[in-house]
Structure formats: C-alpha cells, structure tokens
Image (cartoon, rainbow, N blue to C red; front, side, top):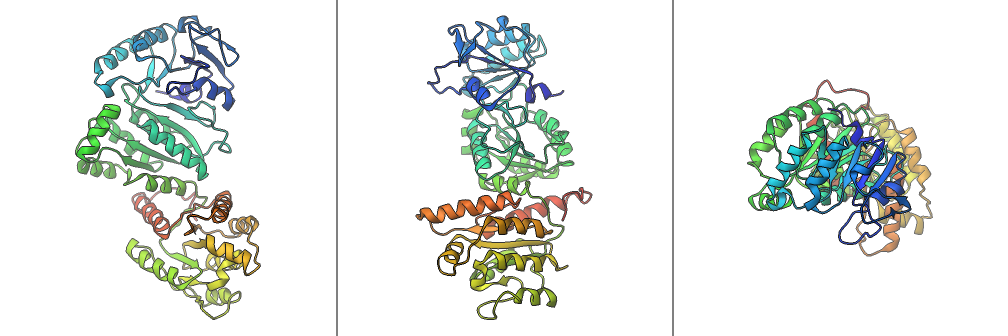
Length: 474
C-alpha cells in the first residue's frame, strides 16, 4: 500500500473548516494556506459561505473532485456520515482530529466507521490525533516555515501532545524533519504501516517513535525488523508501568502488555529503546550529523582540569576510550598554549586558552590528524565564551565554527555547557553559539553525559549492523 497520496496529496479537503477558531480547534485550513500548500484546497462547512476568503462546500458530496486527503474537525456524532460520504466521493485518505472514540470506550463507533470505510478504498488516520505533516508537500498540523527546508528525520507519535512537543523542540534544535504522523487510536492505519512506508523512503535516515500500544505485535515486529535493516528506529514507550498503562488506556484506548517482554522483542528486532523524551531528542539530533564515528576512541578537549577528570570517569563508565595522543599531536597542541595549568595529553586541558575558538580549532586539527582518534568532543562553555570577550579581548565568531566544520574531517560532537540560569546575556550567547554549531552540522549537547550517551548508544546500534553502509562513516 502506497501512502504517497497521504503525504503528497494533490488535493485536500478540510471538513469543518471555519473562521471561528475557538473551542479547542486546530485551524487546519488556515495552516495549509499559510504553509503554501500548492494543491487544491477545499473548505467544507454547510454553515459558511467562505473560509479565509475561499468558497466553501456544503458537503463532501458537493466537492468538485475526489480529493486525495480529507481532514476532519467536525463533531464525533457526524463521523459515520462523513465516512459514508468520503467513500461515495472516492476519497483516498481521511484523518479524524475528532476525539470521543475508543479512548472513551466508544469502540462500537470505531468498528462502524471501519465497516463503512471498507465499502470503498478509504484509509483512516487516527482518530483522536493531530495528523500528518510533510515538509516537502506542506501538508501539516502546524506552521512549517520555522524550518529551513525538509530534512531527513521522521517521527511517529501516538500522542498528539508528544508529537507536537517533538516537532517544536526539533525546530528549536535545528533537527530538520521530513515526515511526521500523530496516529492516535490507529483503528485502521497502524504504526507498522507507517514504518513499512518510511523504510523505503530514501529521504528518511532515522525514525523516532512514541508508542503506547501495538495492535498486532507480529506485524509490528516484522515491519520493525525490515525497517531497522535499512535505518535506525528509536522508540520511547509510554505506559510501561501499571499506572502509566491506565493513563494510556484513557488517552488512546491502549492495551499495554508486559514491558519487559515487549522491550526484549523490540531490541531483538533491531529497535533502539530510550527511557525518556530527552534521550529521544538527543539521538534524533545525532541522526543529523554529517559524519559518524568508526570507533570508540575519543579525543576530548576543554578548558579546566576538573572537566577533563569528570569526562575521564564518565567515559570509562560508558565504554568510551581515551587513547594516548601521539608525540606529534601533543607537540602541535603545545604550539598554541603555555605549559601552565594545561595538559596536552588526552583529555586535553587547554586552560584559559580554551576560551579562544581559534586555539580550539588548532587543537581539533591536531586531533583530526591523529590516527588514534575516531571522534572529537570539544567542550564549549558559555561562561568562558563571555569571559574571553570581556577580559581577554578575544572575539569568538560563527566564522571560526564554520572553519571547524570545513577543516575537521573526523566526527565532532560538541558539548555546550551553561551554568548561568538567570542571565539574559548568557542565554543570548548560548543560543547564538548553539545555532552556529548546528549550522555547521554538528550535533550539540548541553552536558558531557548526554554526549557520551549518544556515542555509546550509536555503537549499540552500529555493532548490531556490521554491514552498515560506509557512506556516512568518517
């Protein structure tokens, strides 16, 4: 089954489109207009003559053509009649934003809707979800102009709130998305259907998921195995505990199984499980890296002995190696620093010289030429950047960071720390430095622990796939 008309529709109808946006509605019609959807766009509402300057149609039957995709934001009581009309009109896909189905115990309504849909070739997204977003076709449940073009990351979320949060945070972290689905109760199209489609989508390099329940475990695991043979699939499971499963049942009508057994099966079929939303976001960011490490040998560089000691302890605990640097590398590092409160061994302590991006670039070039190093982890501190400008009269610029991206050929995973929580200037520096690092193509993490986590987890995945493509390897 092709989902192309769902993600790349030539025509879209919004059932219940309105200029009155109160009452918890999502303004799908206005969002599609604002995003620049170029296909035919039809508002359907018997009580309106026009919506946002566009002529409305009183019913689905009145539409001038069979549309590829219909979005429903109408009362739940109208759902059966809407599906019947969609089948008559030969609509291909329909998304129900509307709630009040199985999550409230109304399973009979879901069954009736499916029976009516099967009388034609209509496929259903949801119900009780915010729907589909494709950054190429401009189909969306939120404004997409905050992202500079389509990326390579996909997200599949059972919860509309989690999906919306993922998209929002991805936007702020410059994790460029390609396709997103909030799939809700999955009475028809299920998680495995989306996985099967995305597995063959060459535009997608990584899939992140938030899952509450699986309707058909065998089909899901089969789709997961097929997909993970091609690209990583990261899963955050909701409803792992008894209390969480009760919440999931009231949310999407989910029936949670034994998590220990479920988790073992997911891992066996190639899935990567995470424990929380932050880990999900961190791994998604790693998926945007331009280069991935071939080995666990890390070259760390920072300003301050304590940070180096802390990194060493955390690296040992996570299975990351800190190999000895060659004499040539150490000599090169020493060219730009003095032998006071510094160290040219790995981890490299640049002392106050680490406040200067140009010195950091020189050190990274030294590590880049060392055959013992697989990945470089530079430690940036917002406070140090501010001190460099204020006291040392050193001007650190985005140009220096772009030079790092241009001159360093090994994978770089920077840490950008900030311990000032009530300083607006520090926040400005943090945001500008973060944006510069992301624009250079680096995945950036606020703590050493998070940087080491993604390195460790990457190898957990990579070592299960010994024949993985070398296309993105360093």
